[in-house]
Amino acid sequence: MRDELLSTFHGLMKAKGEVILPASGLSMYPYILPRDECRFVPFDGRMAPGQIALFVSEEGVLISHRLHLAELHLAEPWNKEERYWLRGDGNFSGDRPVGRAQMIGILVEVTRNGRKIAEKRFDRRWWGRLAVRYPRLLKLSAHASRWRAKRESAFTDEGGGQDGVSNRFPESPARGAASGNP
Image 1 (cartoon, rainbow, N blue to C red):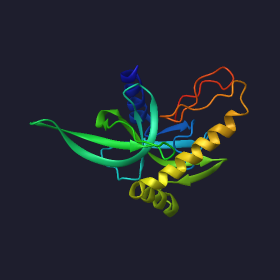
Image 2: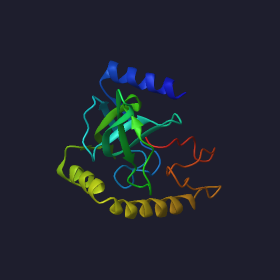
Image 3: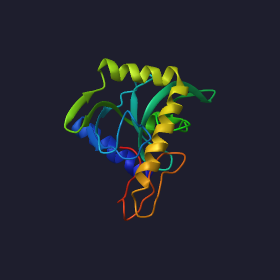
């Protein structure tokens, strides 16, 4: 499943030059909200801490989270591999490191309620830098995300919620298939 998803999205990026996906879940709350449309361009190997990447997790889930650290890792003495450490602004902890092959794109624009918000705007870059430089600030965002999830889940039939790690709503017929971030 993971490899199929990777090849599909790498193919889409190559053919179209961009991918636009609707956001779901609250792992990037308040920076990205459910139902925002996120436009990603191909990942070319260059990415600065604070930018948001689209990647496929080891479990085969399509996720977009903020880059906190990029490093070269010595997998073997003769082989250096790139690893990317990412984290959702609304999550309490970071993701497992992601290899270059799992990276698909970089967020360049969010459309919210018909209004386009470019990632190159000063306020968006400023938030990205703050999020990376002061990770404790993200704990406030994570608490806000949990509070919003609890408030929203009070209105569902099953009174559901989000899982503790990814901030994704579990799949249910009442909600439809909500599958993580864009």
